[in-house]
Amino acid sequence: MRHTTIQSSLALLIALAPLASCSKPPATPEPQKAAAAISPAPSTPALTTPAPEPTPSTIDSSIATNVGDPANFHQVMTALQLAVEKHDTATIASLVSYPIVINPHTKEALHIGTPQAFIAQYDSIVTPHIAEVIAKQKYDNLFVNYQGAMFGNGELWIAGICRDKTCTQSDIKIRTIQNTDGKSN
Image (cartoon, rainbow, N blue to C red):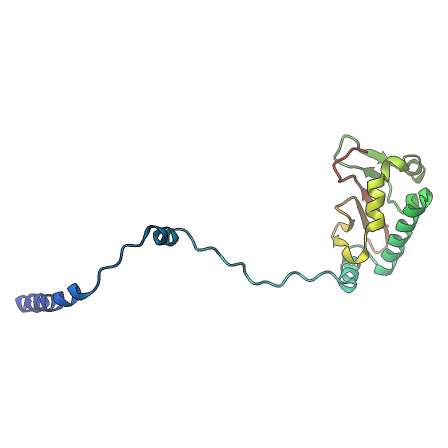
């Protein structure tokens, strides 16, 4: 029986051999086509919708979650921008959370503990660059996260500062001022 199975398989192979020889051998790819076959095809960019621009309502929600009451935040932001425009050092000093380190993590870091010390150092703290960033910041373009609301590229941060250990009461204050334009003050 085994002999019959081998003979049958051999007969089948012999019968199919002419059919195999009739098929065309694979063409050798031309050099350019071969290179294209080897190199990956250029990827087409995925069709994605751009991230939506933040709207006042999404900013309000982020402010409420991470900083405090959006209406209070608006008041602080407006007061800050007007005070910078008028060079009202006392108002700006009242909006700061003390103690504050100006330009933290730099050789020029200033440790300011009181509003009076802030006013005395105002011109070295609120440089023309920082004043411009504050003046140009639009509410709709704020970046907001758990650290607060960022002006510009991080030159100024406004945050909710807890007044008690449980943080049931907080103030909205300037928490960080730093020069990010790469120039010394």
